[in-house]
Image (cartoon, rainbow, N blue to C red; front, side, top):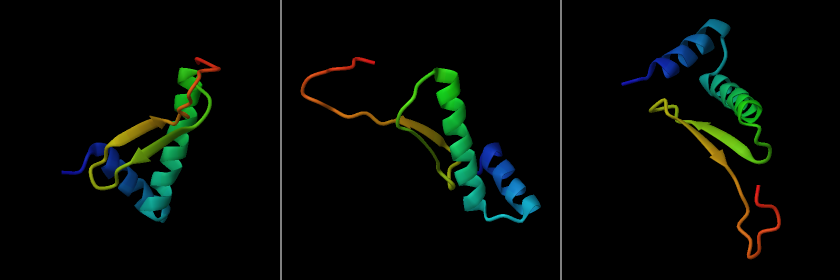
Length: 72
C-alpha cells in the first residue's frame, strides 16, 4: 500500500511533467536542509526516501576515531 506521502510525490511529478525520481531527490534535499535548520546540526546529513514503501530515513554520518577530539 502506498503512503499518502508517495501518492503526493507521484501526483506532483505528473502535474509538473517531471520524472518521479527527480521529485524524490528534490524532496530529499529539501528535507536535509530543513533538518539541519531545525536541529542546528551541521555536517554530513542525508535523507533517503524509499520509493516503494514511502518511508523516510534521516542519517547523520560520523567518523569513528580512537580518541575523541570534538565531542559534539
